[in-house]
Image (cartoon, rainbow, N blue to C red; front, side, top):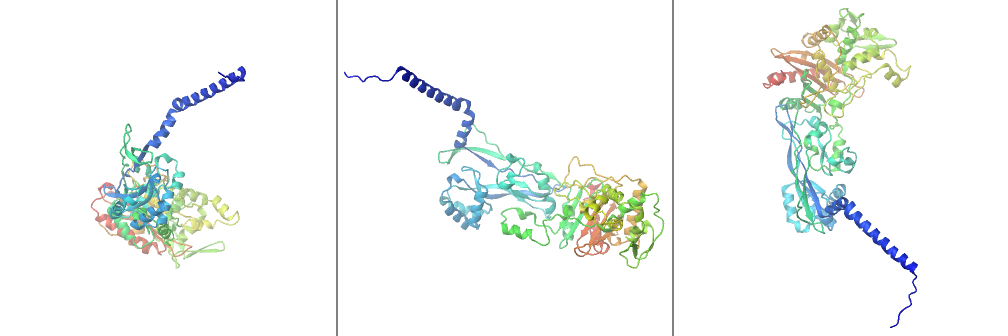
Length: 588
């Protein structure tokens, strides 16, 4: 037998064996790492391919009025989804879907890209389908492989009121929204999130917990049954919230404000509860439920009446004469001021080289503080301006809550402007303004700007001697402590007497706010605020006392004229309706 000569040296043999053993050790080490050390990691990956997690939407909590009537509910809505891994010939299937549901195939495709989360995760194509549309989709199921539909709870508004700026609305979570969320893990694409109003403020309470189910899938991503060993979890509905709103009063306010622009707020000054509020014009509360196309959104956005603006908390207005009680407070705290001293009003007042006119061009004659407030005389306050320091007046305004948020439980509140010397210098320069600016500010004009909700808090403080609760819309155990000026009772009583005369004196500018209801006493103040952008704004603020209860009101009508002629009659209607309501025991 012939044998080949072994030309491999022993050294080469040892090297070869060593390399083989090194490779075997590396292989065994890698095997150990994968099978033992990284078992959990790769097991999860394998289960991800084998098991599909399906989540179900939880119903949001209900929003109720103070008597338990439903303001916001949930109703079932059909949503069309697709599993990308099972979806073949997307364009053809999108065309079929488009022909059935009436939504352009480009919009269907856009939604597919917008809500895509993964190859085997449901991707939303359309929502708010009718039962008829779902039936037709079911008829075409053989041509729509990978397309499914499910039922989700959508917001529904069953009451007779809108209250749209109070309740707010929800919005679908898309990629940009989810990217900016601080708690991304709580939301999936297509979830609903409170966007404005109470829906946003109380999102944590209203949002429920999603349900989960686990299904085994084959190599093609098709479901073959429930996964064993993994328990499904039913969705948990969100918590209900009870508001301070009374549906009947809210309905009355909405009827009164129909066709008007402005704000009306009615509440309980002692507790700060708001029982009705309207920012007009408003919008239908279900405007943002269902599918809203971009062109529809643009139409609402470009509406010249700006219905999306919540004038109650975002509108900035000169208050006019309704803040003369702030100036009166500042004067009464000055020992040099005599409220009973007569000051002559001839219809104008000259300060430096400027002439400041009174709204009553022929003048009011001799005025005291009381008659100046009930007649709403401007010249009286002009003549006492030498006793007023701008920064001290600014501090008094802030003590009544102006120039700062009221901490109302609706997000987006503006703080307004209460000018100080520093503010005026920054805005106009050191020599660009003079003490004459305070003449405008002391009667609620000039640079002073307020929101209606600040005015509501202000009138509540006047009605309760500074003991008003912080304004709020939802019944809660604790509300933030309210601000209040520190005044002796004699000052509060003096201001109340003046405001009572505004309504009941024969020369009072607020006479038309009195409903002349037996047992009801009305206090108030009118205001006609000059508007540099158009007609004057009409104000009325006040409260009514009836059967040991108090009801405060703020009326603002944009570009409407005189507060006494236009806003005060609106208050009269509201007070008259309140007196007829037989379910007011909760104000006691």
